[in-house]
Length: 126
Image 1 (cartoon, rainbow, N blue to C red):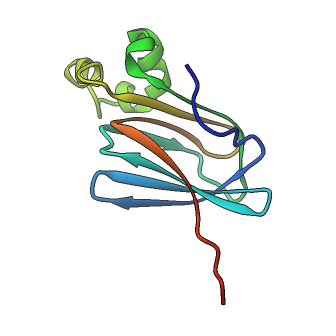
Image 2: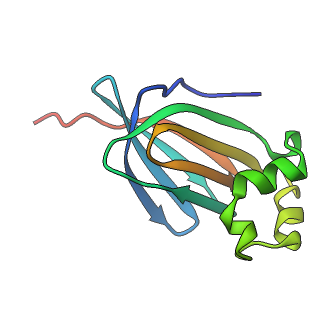
């Protein structure tokens, strides 16, 4: 199940952390979009560069991802011990959402959270 807008060729231009929420700012076709990852349980962002071009995004229930795939996608967080088997099991508790942003260039993001909210950023009407 893949939900949400197609952000292909968009650019990740910002990342903001507020408590347990993380907001991603994406520029696509001269419009700024904000993805709010609510109540983030696990978050990994690799290779944040100037010009983080999006290949695709996936939003789905964590329950649809097998354990080995989840561990592979969490990569260094698991390998370096930042999360462990207890954390992996907790990812499957409740109705958590798996979010993945794959790059054509730059930043890859993987998150486990309660919800992903998509918004168009308000335009500045001076």
